[in-house]
Each structure stands twice: as structure tokens, then as C-alpha cells.
Length: 613
Image 1 (spheres, one colour):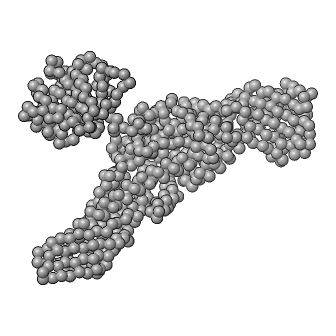
Image 2: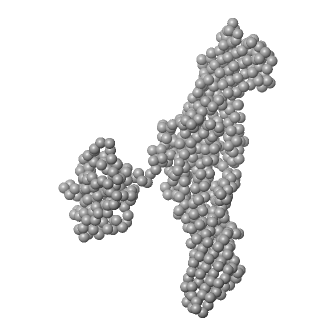
Image 3: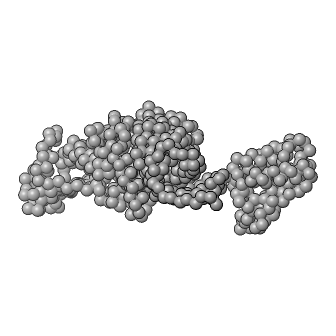
């Protein structure tokens, strides 16, 4: 494609159009395959940019002919710019088109700008496609597709940083150092050659670690006072027409190092990933010692000086490479742990990220799909209520959970038969010991006094969940059946019940405070058919549902959910003063925590296992 700002338009208009195009290329880069064709420069004083910019790339061809065909541009190299500017100065035309160009349509950029049509914004979009994964949106666009958000504040980063040294130790210890060899020519001696083998690390000590959150940039981690001894075997020799000598010795390298890693968080492979390529080591000491001799002669000193330089390069490369590998392993580890925590049996939650995380000087915030999965089906979220203003920065960590995550979870639990309970024996007898204002019907007394009566309750319809600042409303139709093998008498009734639930967590136990909001459409029947439920019976059952049934079901849910969370390891965390806050269409869980030592142990164990594979 050729884009032209025609001379027939005013200089200001052309410069404006070209400026937009130039800034887009400079900002977004240019996909592979673009060519630039440079002709005479603008007479109006717009430096280093021509009137005509030709871009060529494999065409994105529509199904029918269109007046303009846009070809996505590609990254423009520095050498291309230099050649273009040189050509402009000489009045020459330079065509840098790629040899596999397949299209060359012309579009007058000046006319497009003047008419105000949409081709130029489309071009800008195409320019950015190479830098933005389709699976990851910008945070603002991703909000409505977000089912869960995690905000980790700076105090939490400080707590996690307490054990950064352990991860760095793993990086040093698990790094595999390759054999090193080289040679150097010395005056009067000839070529000195060496080969270092079996390099291993010993006596590793790490002084301290600091962390800083740099807004819209990266996390800065500084590791100071790393001391370590590297040991191995060296074969070396030197020779000339006067001397020819070769030897093999054990060696050790004493080192004092500072390490700086600046991970940049991004959205990669459906998880929060870290680019740790900004990694460098400062060597305050790196001394090669042969035979345990700490005072080498002049030849050994010259020899060890240039060998030490090679060792520096290799150690830096391998340590930074191992840190990058550990960062990937840690991202996978956290992702799997989160999905495992939200999964049980055939029910699971997709916690893949929908956008790159937001980084400020006070917190890191990640955005997750939160799509409930059940039996190979997945929920869809398209109208999430998330807004960053809903979260504060006072606590160490915040979890924001959308109703569009929680409601499908409740539905999946219903479909999986999780809301079914049978009660018998002494527990059943105790259930009806509570004082109710209405008198107990005679048929109920007869059933309860029969041999081995059994009460069964379950959800008939899919419960619906909706959260407001007053709490989380759960509404559904529940059924109750009371039978006894020794009696022909039985009771069955259904009730449409809505409760408002508020949750809290303390002493490693979930507490649900459920208040009945409404109960309606209470329909029931007695067997044999000759018996009929009277209004007094219905009123008793209504009161029993409110004062006995709702508290009993709530207690079962408390124990069941607590057991499930502890099964996933929640009780291993030191959770400090957690608070659950309901909002309009969402729930926020905010808390402080102590360092999760068990996670570090598990992570290092997984890392060791992966090294042994």
C-alpha cells in the first residue's frame, strides 16, 4: 500500500497527517514486511519525512472489492530511517520494499485526513496488532469481562520479599554452569589455554533484599551481599618454543555479588507473566584460586585475571537465565494453585488473565476471567461491575469477586447434586425440639415417633444469587420429604425461599449469617391421599422453615464450605482480620497475611523436581 500526503493540500494539513502516521510508527513499531518509499521532502520545513510513504505487506483482502485496501505496516529499523533521510537530502528515491511484497495500492493520506473517514484509525489499530495479544485486552476494556480481581498492595510485597532470598538461592544453586574454555597469547610465554569443568556452587549466603513498585513500569528487586564459592576442575597449559607445560588442578572462585532484577509484568499465555531480562550482577569480588594458593605468582595472576573475566560473563548469563526460568515456574505454580483452590470434582473456575496487570507505586492488580466450568461447559461474563475505585489500599490483599462468577458456581453446585441432605436418628429428633409458636401437627408427631424416620431436603430449582450492599441474596425452591419405613404416612412440601447472607471468616472457619427475606408458594401433600394439609399445618411448616430449616441448612453450608476450603489448603495460611464486604453485583474480601511458608516449600520442591527431570 502507498500512502501519500498530496502537495495540493496545505502544508499544515500534510504535516498533521504525516505527524500522525510517524508517531504511530514510532509508538507501535511496524510489522515485518513493510516497505518505505521516500521521495522529495516537504518544502514547508517538516524535516526528515517525505511527502510519500509507501507501505507494502501481504494484503488483507476483503470478500469484495473495496476502494481502499489497507496492509498492516511493520517495525521500521534504524538503518531504514538513515537511508531514507540520506535519500531525501540527495533528492533520490529509496525503495525498501520487502522482496515478498504482494500488493501495492495507493491511498492519498491528505484526502483521507480532509474527508475525515476512518481508514487512518484502522491503520493505527493494525499498527498495534503485533504488540497486543488478542487474548489480553487493556485493563479498562477488560473490566466488563472480569470475574475476579486480585490487588496486592506494597505492604504485601514487603512480606513476600522477606523470603526472596530463598528463591534467589534456588536460582544460584539450580543454575547449570557450562564448561568454559579459552586461550590468550602472552609475551614470552605463548598461548595460554584453559578449560573449566564441573562448576558447582558452595557456601552461598545472601545479605538482604529490597523491593520497589515502579508505577506503569516494573518491579525493582535488589539483592545485596551475595557471597558464594564456586568449585570445579581446571585444565590449563601454556607454551612457546621455549616452554611447553600442561596441568590439571582443582580450583575455587570466591565471589561477592550484588544482584538487581527488574521484572516487567505482562499478560502471557493466559497468566500473569514476568519478563526478567532486565537482570544484571555487580561483582565486588571474583577471585580465582588454584591449588588453594591465595598469593599466585605473576604468571598465575595474569592467567587468573583473564579467566576471571570469562567466568563473570558465564555466571551472569546463567544466573539471569535461571531467574527467568524460576519466574516462569512461579507464574505457572501460582496459576495452578489458584485454579486448584477454586476447583472440586467436575466444578472448576478458569482464572486466566484478561488483561496485563496494572502496576502503581502502591499495588499490583491483576484481572482474571473467573469463568465457572462444569462438565465441559463454561459460563460467560460480559457485564461485570468491576471498577478500580471499589478497592482501597489499606489492607495487604484484596479479592474482588463478581456475581457473574458466584452465581454460576451456585448453579454448578446445584447441577452436581451438592445441595442434597438427609437427616435421621437423634439429629432429626433434635431438629424439631425447637420452640415454635404454632402447635406441631399430629401427623408430624406420628412420623417422628416411628422407627428410623428420615428427612431429606434438596434444591428443586437452580438457586439464583445476587449481591447488594445489604448482603448476598440467594433464592430458590427447596423440597422437604419426611418418611418412615415402618409407616405408610409421609410428608412432602416445597417452598420458594429467599435469604440474605453475610459471610465472615475467623479461626479458620467460615460463618454465614442468613436471614429469611421471604417464603412463598409453600405447597405440600400428605400420604395416604385421604389426608389433607390444613392452613394450620401450612403455617407450622412455614415457621419451621424459617426458624429450623434455614439455620440448619446454613450450618451445613458453613461446615461444608469450610471443609472444602481447608481441603484446598486455606487453613495453612496465616490470615489476619479478614473482612467480607458486599457491593452492588460483587463481593470484596480484604485481609492481611503472614508469609505463606508452606507455599515457598512447595514451590522450591517443585523447582527441585523439575531440575531432576
